[in-house]
Image 1 (cartoon, rainbow, N blue to C red):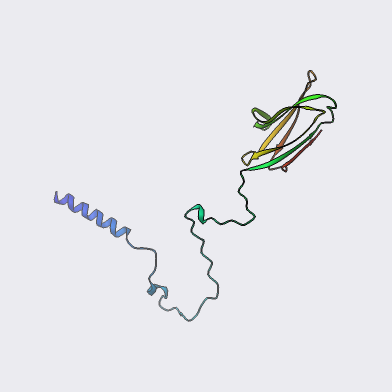
Image 2: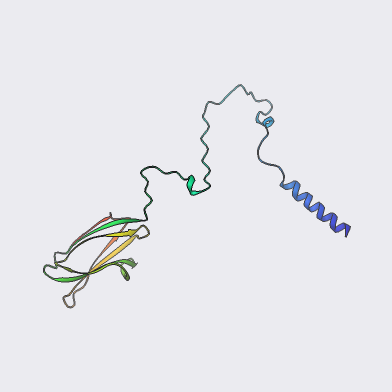
Length: 159
């Protein structure tokens, strides 16, 4: 049992001696032998990065606004639908060119192919799509797509 206890003590002694010490230097090590302390470097030292420990430590400019939504303005004008009724969908996208009709911002009838409205769009929304369905039998819907990265927050559709 004494041999086992001796190995345990040696093991802990090795761990403690291997993990000891710090990376900081003592004042005696700041001026190594042979260097001249009278020569100084005129370059200013960079300011240290502030240590951020909580959100209260974060600093922003006066112009910065933390907004989770933006206002999208839609102006729709379809010249091919004068004096006709139609139905407008403005929806999130399932795929690049497929609307998710379960997540629509607007589902409304329109007259004369015109609509104007504003929507609050979350910053996570990269794209939207619109479809205009005419009440004319066998008519194909008019589709148009909006992308935040390619378009502005003023979505104008003139067809």
